[in-house]
Amino acid sequence: MARLHVFADEAGNFDFRRHPNVSNFYIICTVTMTDCAKPAALLTDLKRQLAWEKAPVRDSFHCTDDAQATRDRVFETILGCEFGVQATVMEKAKANPSIRKTDAAFYGHGWLYHLRHGLRDEIFFADELHITAASVRTKKEQVAFADAVRDVVRETVDGPAVRTSFWQCATDPCLQLADYCTWAIQRKWEKGDARSYDLIRDRVTYHYDLFARGKTLYF
Image (tube, rainbow, N blue to C red):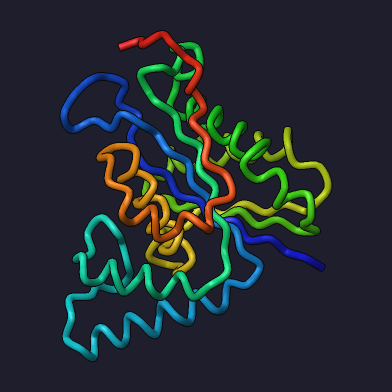
């Protein structure tokens, strides 16, 4: 029985305006793997080793907050694992107001395309599919977003048995791996800095700008 694990994270916010502290893009990123044990063990071992070296390390890895020296070690570690990366990028200024009436609607729209296209080939060969998404939202928002993802899964996934989970990133090393890949993709789009993206480039199986053909800017 082939079980595919999908670890999902997002980058960006739901603020639709031009402002220095507002992201230009909203990015859905997934990391797919059939073996969770190796990355979990390697990242846990790395955390213990960094602690032994008296390097700055917290209870979990989070790319935005980690020191660059820690990032280098984490990227080096995860590249010893087998995984694929898929990303759907949405330029928020090109998002028609009709698809962003609510945050959950916008989130669900992105997931619809990501599941249909970004994960299509991976899902095709899976007997079982477990989607675990990083969640740092309020309980009410978690319910709304979980419902949006489940609705999309019901619409698009025909075949494998499906489970969805929303967990804190700190609770699962594989979500931390997804966080690192998401950060690398976000840096490429928001800052034009592809140094970290280049490290995972050969793992990227899907990287799509959803509104690339759009010409209208709504703000």
